[in-house]
Image (cartoon, rainbow, N blue to C red):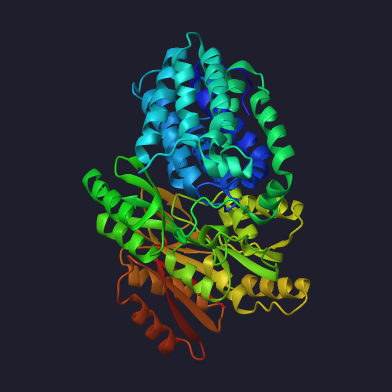
Amino acid sequence: MPQVPQTFFDALAVRTWCGLALRALGRAREEIDAINVYPVADGDTGTNLYLTMESAAAAVEAVFDGHGTLTERKPPLADAAQAMAHGALIGARGNSGTILAQLLRGMAQVLAADGETAHTDGEGLRLALRRAADSARHAVAHPVEGTVLSVASAAADAAGDTQGDCGTVARAAYEGACAALAATPGQLAVLERAGVVDAGGRGLVAVLAALVETFTGEVPVFTVLEAHARVAADETHTRVEDVSTSGATAATPCEGGPAFEVIYLLEADDSAVTRLRERLDALGDSLVVVGGDGLWNVHVHVDDAGAAVEAGVEAGRPYRIRITHFGLGDVHTTGAERPPRERAQRAVVAVVPGEGLAGLYGEAGATTVLARPGEPPASGELVAAVRRAHAREVVLLPNDAELRHTAAAAAEQARAEGIRVALIPTRSAVQGIAALAVHEPERRFDEDVVSMTSAAGATRYAEVAVAERQSWTMAGICQAGDVLGLVDGDVAVIGADVTATARAVLDRMLAAGGELVTLVLGDEAPASVADILEMHVRESYLAVDTVVYRGGRQGALLLIGVE
């Protein structure tokens, strides 16, 4: 992490702030989860904020990687700020994370207004905080006081009343946010009954504390928060303990409210999103739509999850769709305290590249994490999936060679939480299918892992994709638009036709033998390719079976596995 303090708000300051904010949210995550009672007492606000910030930080790091490591080659402020906002947008989780994404986007709009500016000063930071608070409030269909919106507005107000450098402005914003956070129980009855401050606002205070540290090198002390926390702890110790263990509290923010949380990214124009807001507002509550320039993050609580997704389809192209059931019998739907769910003995968590495979893995009992081309999941997202699996033992299938370090970090964190995790280094979703096919939860854990690892290792994998640019490969020089056949991660065939290239790849793989061919078709693959390849295998290779799956929007035109 770069040295602090930073003098001006430049690209390096953006990078430093993101890193410090991620660390601060990591430390505060469990505390924030424990006090989460509004709008839904589901105990995940801290986790959602952390995952959103992790995505923002990763996007900024990618920009720096693209500009080299030397100080003189650091990216412009506009590039870093826009990357931060885009990373938060595509990684936003839950109500709180979606609002945080819009706060960062609002700041980026000011910081990146002049693409040639290398840095901005305290005045620029004041304007950025103001835009952040206003844009976040505008993104929420029905703003409620006593929430993170109140805290953001107070921070912007305090900053606006302050003259000075970035450190001075950041500290004023932080202190204003602390005061507003301490006041939230008096603004929302549900918070007052539970004896807690707003969880989203608490997360924003942590993010602003990191901003102060970025420009001063000092970690501010939560004096206002600590005073309130002591009072709350004395009055409601039992209830707060209940929140931390069950994710619920006796207070009911939305008794009888919607049963599902629906989140998706949406490619659509502004006019379509305006109509979408109106339709979703009629379907449910907690509606937050953030983004712009053709890409949006949509969050809503509804009873009819299908209708919410259908509304997105009518508006544009929704993807990375996440639907979470708040659960029968939890406080959100009944007003009663939710009994703790018993842990399963064993579960499988897998990263999959498309909705079709997510459905296939899900039917086999796996908990899935959807990965999009160019949008690999972060370690925090994998840890969240391991927690969601709610098992004592977890087998983790990354299904991508590039995710081995991310998956290893996630496994290590999950082990630190007392979960027994085995990481099988699958490099393709077809290897994961082979591993899942021999998974037997009734076996001893070690035996099951060995069997799954052997099945994955015995499966050769390939993919057929289209080259995006000219480049050198193991098979020669390819041009943009060429069809590439990759076997075990290396380009083996360069062709002009998808079916012919796929057939050549299959022949290479089956030359070494095989008993089963697995084909996973992407949405953009020719409709006839599966039938042609099945016939080719049947006619050319005796005793070799073929199975075909639909992968959806998976990046590659075709995935191939040979066992």
